[in-house]
Image 1 (cartoon, rainbow, N blue to C red):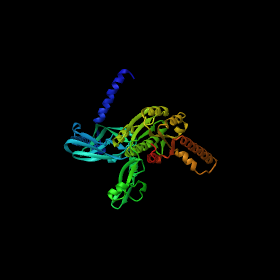
Image 2: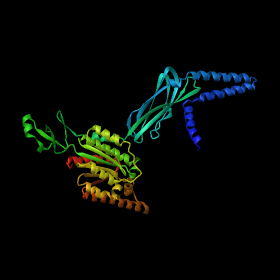
Image 3: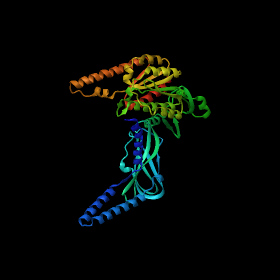
Image 4: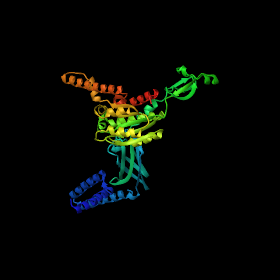
Length: 458
């Protein structure tokens, strides 16, 4: 391509965009009317009145077209706006409203083709049409985002047909808006609701059954099932009712969550990427830890540290963690545990529960990981969560109907035993390694954290 042609090409492209934005197109009704007119003209020629039929038919079509086009609003008088939520969870449906307004009342047919991102749920075409009566019209449709990240709605394409329905005016309105698709937080909300303290009803009084701990929390009335060793006799004498001390796990501890974003985490497992599953489990763990009054820090890494959120508390900190992580994608590189752990040891001096979400194979075959973990274990309490290979698990329990199936099953058993042996070896060094199914990842992480809290191991 020559220099002059390269200079002309943007002009041609902008001209094509302009034509597309200002196009008036005939409708199927116009095509049918033209076909009927052609038949009448042919009949007129057969009867010897072809010229009169030609003038009459074309005049009628021209007059009807002029009338139809005059009823359509001018482009500069049409205003388009879109009501779009600022954020939504992955796979959670949300409603979008596109509103069209003009200066004078009209009676038209409105069709919409919105710029829905490709990764979103497709919207049925028949639902994107409405009768425009008066000064404004609104089209509502429901969609959902299937991939995390920031997605753009750039423009809205409109097609307006008049009362006669012979011609349609097409408009492209620039209505640029962004929406943030967060990880699926329904699991985190469900876990938060499920791990609330169990309520015990005694007469008309409702008490919370607290987890064991070493930090004094309050004095309350004794209920059946409470530890009699915790009865506060002095308070009981003053109130003339049996009172008991309530202790809870010590608050203000640090929980550090590490997310592997390397090549293996981009592999799909049960219809979604491993990184999506681990990210949702990590946010569930962060939500529970913050609810328990602890501090939460998060690090995401591949061959480099991609994101780090320092320790913080409160629900606002959960939002900060979500904002820092919701757009994470796996990198097509091998993860560098050495750089991530060295960075963590530099920035996190205080003892913490460090939870690493990764792939079980990475733990087993990364040579530098074990000595680094043993070094960290002197200062931090470590929990390694790896996603179980579901194909490997299915092979270990499948029925054997021949030599091939028996061979595959024996290899699967061998690999499963290797995973168990690795976990046992790390446990002997004080490092907890769990090979967990993807559907149980969040619950496992939360339960292990609560076990640590109730045992005051931090």
